[in-house]
Length: 286
Figure (spheres, rainbow, N blue to C red):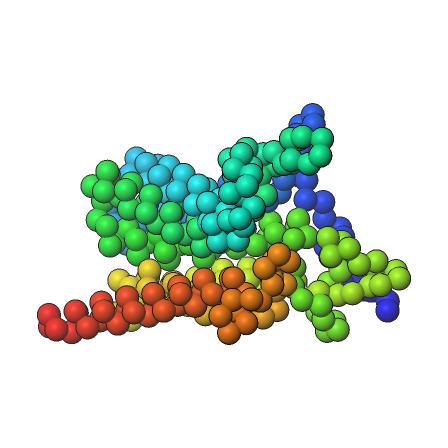
């Protein structure tokens, strides 16, 4: 099989952005900075455009809380959703960038972050920040969930640059060769779905466009958290069919779902239930 420039795109990237002595600065970590800046800029622009009345101090404090929640939650989410047994036996690795082998502990970086964990604890911490700054809870949550998809695109782009979280094998020309799949581009050139790009587009850009336009519908304008949960959960659920599941888990959850599909199913159900309750309450008050 002859591989084209498209198929070989992942081989052009090195996950390391810069090397500071013996410490590699990874592109994925830098993408977190891009994500937070994008969310901040999006929320600030809408705040100014729609005259929501928030100050820079409000946003600075809110983002401090939200960022702390996202980072802690993403790490703990991976620990409890994906490898609870391993981290129960190796608790030091939860918070320290170390891994252990027969020679003892050595630096390996902190590997493993969960979107769902980051969303859950990030939301909780954001609510704390909203309360402490005396901001309108529901108005601020609507603004936050509207901006979330654009911020999310950076995370998946970081995964793509790292060549990780790639998809299942495919014979489609859209497939790409990922070195971390440990296939040989010469003797065994197996292509995989670039599922990171699928997620970046659908769970990021397309979801943001949908939410932004749904705000024009009076009944849905103030229901961004519900719609976000439903939209992300639905898009991610179907993209998971193309994404290779975690090797140590596979598709062993209920009905043969991956762990990501299980979490997204719960996410969609929660968003739909929340939406129905809000609309019902709104109708009964009218």
